Length: 258
Image (cartoon, rainbow, N blue to C red; front, top):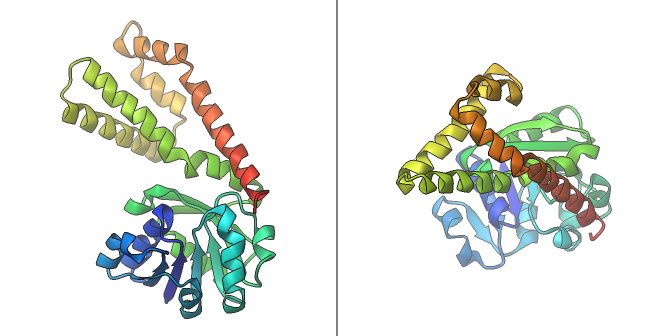
């Protein structure tokens, strides 16, 4: 199956790589082909022509900026009629997508962990049967995927779409904390990363609430309670919740600019 990725920037390039590694024939578009060196090295065809890419493919991913969606879909509308088109553009609803072309549209939101096959990808569509089976087959090359109602897509964008940025801020703070108490930089980074990875795996495999796992670590008069006290005083939970809320609201605003 030939898949076109229109807009091989950061997330589009990650999608193209994941699909290529999964064995799909991939063509990607980028205005300046020379900036897609990593894709070219993987054997991915990279061209500047959206129409040529869309015409040659059975499935099309749209990975451009929200402000460019109308322009791109208008450019290829006659070539994608009846084809499966998966948009990973933040904030653009199925209703808006359908204004530009008569295609089989899916709205999806992966995150940058596509690069290592560990993305959480939510998608919404009105398609059924074999079309949905194909959508899930494609999205599972990115990592975990789940079908949701469209009303949740902006929140998914604010939580997991933007989530890697929040996590890296937290991780950087942990590394700096390690440096502050005298750990070598490499050791502080390795300890922080493995701690995050191990905690996430523990929560997923035990299906415990995060608060339960936290209580396993906290002991009366021990070291952890002093650390947790500082986190609470710094309002870390409030800050993270505000970040998710702000990104969710921005996703809703983007749809109004299409």
